[in-house]
Amino acid sequence: MQFNEYEKLAMRTANTKATKDMKLANFGMGLSGEAGEVTDYLKKVVFHGHELDKQKLKDELGDVLWYIATIANIAGIELNNIAEYNVEKLKKRYPNGFEKEKSINRKV
Image 1: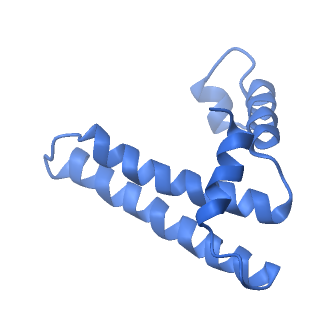
Image 2: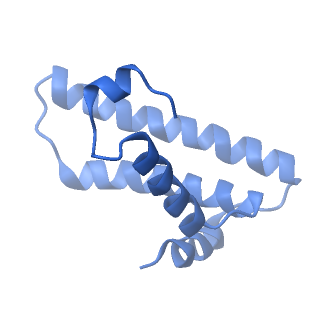
C-alpha cells in the first residue's frame, strides 16, 4: 500500500464534522495520546520485563499512523510528500548514515 492510498482510506473513519482548526486540534491531541501509548508500552518492555508483543506494537503504531494521516490530510499535505521530504532531510543531516558526532553537533 502506498502512503497516499492509506491517507485516503484513513479519512473514511475520521470525524470530519468540525472546523478545520477543531479537526487539527482533535487529531493532534489524539496523536499525542497514541504516541504516549507507544512510549508506555515500550517502557513496559524495556524496564518492566514484558515480552515484546509485535501485534500490540503494530496496533499502537497503526493508531499513530492514522492520526498522522488525518492531520496531513486536513492540512493538505500528502503522506508521500512527507516521507520523501523526511528522507531527504535525513540524508543531508547524516550523509553517511547515523553518526553520533553529527547527532551531538547537528547543523541541519
